[in-house]
Length: 104
Image 1 (cartoon, rainbow, N blue to C red):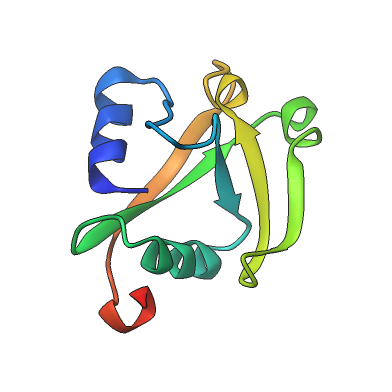
Image 2 (image 1 turned 180 degrees about the vertical axis):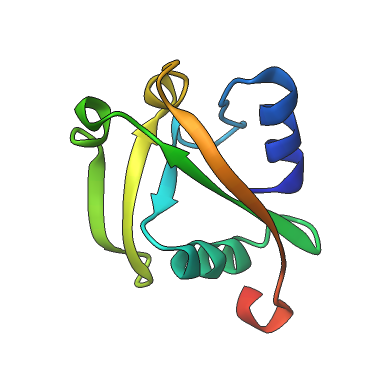
C-alpha cells in the first residue's frame, strides 16, 4: 500500500477506499508476491508498505481467492467491512524501497 494510505490507516484506524478504486483490498499470500505487486503498482513514491493482517477463520474462509492474480501469484480479496471488523488486526508491516526496474 502507499505510504499515505498506510499513514491514514494508522491515524484513523479505518480501512478506506480511494476514488475509482474497489471497495476492498487484495492481499498477497506471500511477502515476495506483495513486494512484486507493490513495485508494479507504482504507489507514487520511492517506498511502499507491505502489511500483514490476522483475520478470524469465519471471515477469511469467505474471501474471494485468485490463484494467480495478475500473473503473479495467489491473492485474496477482503471487503472493507471485513477489514474493519474489530477482530481483524494488523500483525506487522514493513516499509519497502521500490525497485524502479520492477515498476515497469
